[in-house]
Image (cartoon, rainbow, N blue to C red; front, side, top):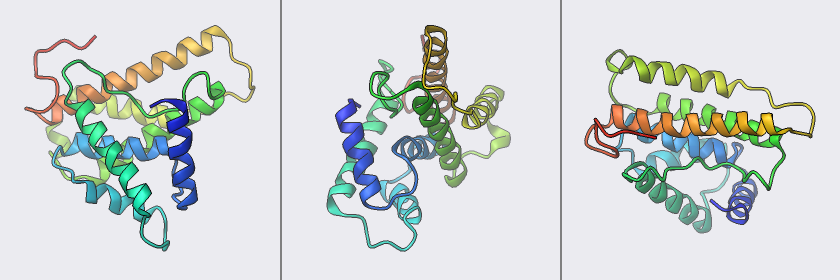
Length: 189
């Protein structure tokens, strides 16, 4: 998602009093879809509504934007060319501490979405999925760096975290949703 679209979408959520961030909302959607590929748009929108606590119904504009994000996310998760991407601020549009916070929020949303969806019981999950979920929980607790300055090493570490989560989501989706997305035996690079 390019930065202008990210900013516009974030602003729209804020205007409609959605308390959680765009990365957290996208993480929640991805968690729900990983747990159950049958997750309907309305199920996700119900959770968005809960996040608004007593506000009037979503505007048509926000509903359409969320529906477009839902469709794009399903398409990306099922794309065999691994084009799935996390909805995060662009590297050149936000300081490292803001991007780290957004990644932590994304992972927090993912965990919430996994918990709010029905799907295969956890005891049936492959050990690798359970390990990834624990890693995502650790990332959700990351504290952003206090200083505004970042060096090349920090930027590389952040990029590696983002890629780890991205590939982890694809692995979880493929593991818990056989027949959807990348097929078993395919190699993810």
